[in-house]
Structure formats: C-alpha cells, structure tokens
Length: 268
Ligand SMILES: [Fe+2]
Ligand SMILES: [Fe+2]
Image (cartoon, rainbow, N blue to C red):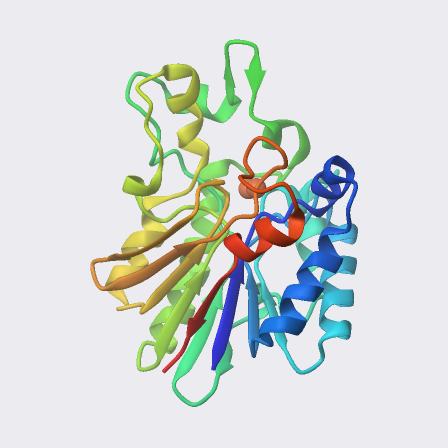
C-alpha cells in the first residue's frame, strides 16, 4: 500500500499568492503517482466550510484513493471552533471520527491535537502563554480559534481521546497523525524570545510520549512549516508541509514545490 503525505497546503493563500490552482497541481501529482491513501495533516485552508469542500472534491475526484485528514489550527478558524470541528468531522476521512484500518496490518489513528505550552521556553508564565502576545504580535489562534476552553484543556482532550484509541489498537501497526508537533527536538529554538515564545503553541510532548508508549511505527504531523523525514526512537517521523508561497518555497511553481513537499511511503 502506497501512502502520500502532505500538510499545510493553505490553499486559499497559496492560490491567491501564486495565481495558480494549487488543487490542480495536487491532482496532477496524484494522477502521476496514484497513491492508495493520501494523508493530509491539517491546515488545508482557513475556515471549516472551505476546508471541507476542498476535501470532499478531492475525494470525489479520486474515489479509488482514500483521503485521510486531521484538522489544523487554520481549519477551525470560526466564531465557534467546536462547531468548526464538527463541520470537519462530516468529511468521512477525518480521523477525528475514529481510527481507519489500512489493509490487514495497519491502522491510522489521529486528530488535530492542540498545544499545552510544553515546548515553551523558560521565563514566561502559563498566563503569558495563554494570552499569546509577545511584543506587538499576538498568536493568530488567539483571535480566530475560540474553543471555549483553555489551550491546555483542549490539548488534553485530544491526548485522552488518542490514548483510548491507541490502547484498543496496540496489536496493530499504527500510524499516528496530528497537526501539531509531538517532539520538542523538532521545534526550532532560536534563542530569540520573540520567536521562542511562540514555540509554546507548536504542540505537546504528550503526543510524542503516547507514540512511544504504544509503539507507534509512523508519526505524521504538520504545523511547523519545516520538512522532516527521520527516524526517532524507532518511529518514522514525517512532517511534509507545503508552506507559504513565496518565502517558504524553494521552487517557482506549485507543481515543483508540491512534488518536493509530498512524501510517498510504503506500508509493508
Ligand atoms: Fe500551517
Ligand atoms: Fe498550523
């Protein structure tokens, strides 16, 4: 079984800024490589309806390929993030609906995840992280994602839910998927507080700890727009963001950048 991995497509922004159809570039790649499964680990675009529509059309265009998804922070930008979360669950391939078996041996388990400041630098209080403002910059989730609960509570919701599912499926080969980052060493520390402060909003060490506890084989995430593909403690770790055009791209066209961003892996 061949699985394509991509995240952080940010369709709206990238379509506007490149003046090209990102979804057409993606469809061309799929036609060429014909994966059996396509895992999109969050930040499809901004807002739940738009994200869901894009996912629905992608799945309709390629009915033989299973599209799996977890939401990113941008996908839940709405007046009520809980409603946004539910809207996105109506996409059948959303792993928030529950684990999806891939062949006889493998299972994909996942959900968006959130952050609990476990990657935050010393010198700030929980209250400062929860306000999310450093200098004159406020973390956009503070303005656009309204859960009606604290970041720490939201992060715990996913961790508890994922742990239940991991426990039930631990006899299988597991691919764990979140949007946010599971391991501290993957977060870029610059020793510049104006950057490092926002590392607190990158993910939670609890997701990484769960992956280790339940012997997960592969961990797929996104959120940080830095590409990774490495082995960590016996886990194949993949972060394959498309990221923002132009400053995060190294190629002039969406076709080329998508080709570089997507990783095709085999399940055996
Ligand atoms: Fe993103
Ligand atoms: Fe994100």
